[in-house]
Image 1 (cartoon, rainbow, N blue to C red):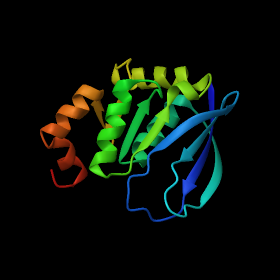
Image 2: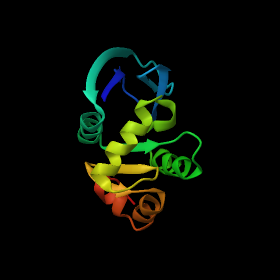
Image 3: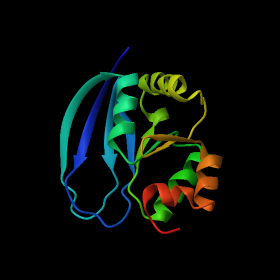
Image 4: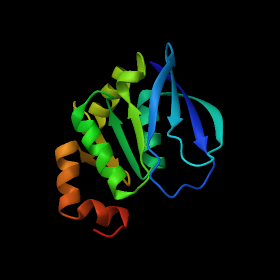
Length: 150
């Protein structure tokens, strides 16, 4: 299966965390949207790749990636944690990606053996779900990985 994503690049400085979401904008098309922070300028780029390559690319090119579902309370807790830490992170809402969401979740399962969300990666390392992410933060390991004060 081929995965089509429209990626909006943020070209502005922001001091606060800028969470991102992916939402379906048509069949088989996902669009990344930013939260409104300052005077962000958005530049659209169309990428074509399969879900395995997309997941790997996102994990490699972002310090923090959360694969999430918009209605999941555990995902919400994880996103709130990163917001409270004041770090930038990337979120992909699998339930808002049309047919590509389940395919991406299957690709993540092949990579991590984790079927549930949130599926969290920090600095290219798979952290796990909400419980593991919260525990890592409580122990200061997450902050150490990110180079921030605990």
